[in-house]
Image (cartoon, rainbow, N blue to C red; front, side):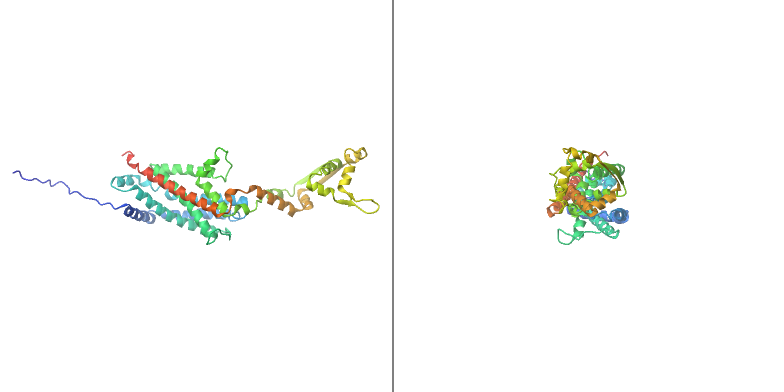
Length: 387
């Protein structure tokens, strides 16, 4: 019988055990936490404080004070959340793409990898949101006292900022899954941020054909959410009055004829002029009846040839706009302008209602889930990369 030969150079087969999906999630969470501590991923936290501080100093006298101030400040706060979320995850996948590919071929589940990132990024976003709210507070932003849900305004505001940040984070996670290198990812990110700003609805008005695009933009939902929480529709629009008030020292010079005044007083359909026509100018002896402004205007109408010379008399004026405001009543003018301009600026998207704000919360959660799913689907094809 032939002798059995053994191959001494043959290495023993190593059997690898791979944990289930939940076990892999735990492994990757541990890896991400180590990267947070030892690879300077923690730097996103002081950066969040710095960005929030710079924005807080600018918006502290605007947010929650007036319509226009709140709208601009809401966009600024939403941009802080977008910035934080994007920088959290824009490089996390593309920087270790080769490692992911190798581990996937060895039995790693993409779903476990993405789930670990979702949990880790959620914790990171919670820390950043807490830092942002705290920094806005110490920079002088005065938060409202109203609240739609139990717990007060700040917890509601915290939830809103967290969801905006997390949705942006998952969007960048998907971009990181698409890009093959960190250079490509960092090149794409500014384009995405500009897209978020342009289609936010807070910087400029868009053509009607492009307005539907804003429904799929995180910044637009974030802007509406923060403005709604600020109770935008019950604030004052002060820009129109501020423009009028800035004209106080403007000189008003010119002239008009008596006929010009009389012609205006003949418009009895105007409620204000009708009331003015009823004002009594002269009464009692020797007048048989009360002499009203309307009576005088009728006597001096263009149909009366005896009043032709008087109608031609010119009246000159030389005053300032501020003096005119004092004559009319500055408080009345301000109240009229602010009230009516505020009504015209109201937007149902900014209604302070539970259904409205809750709807925006759900929308942001759907954004986050959709982007995470896209990242997972994208990485499933990682084996198709060139070796």
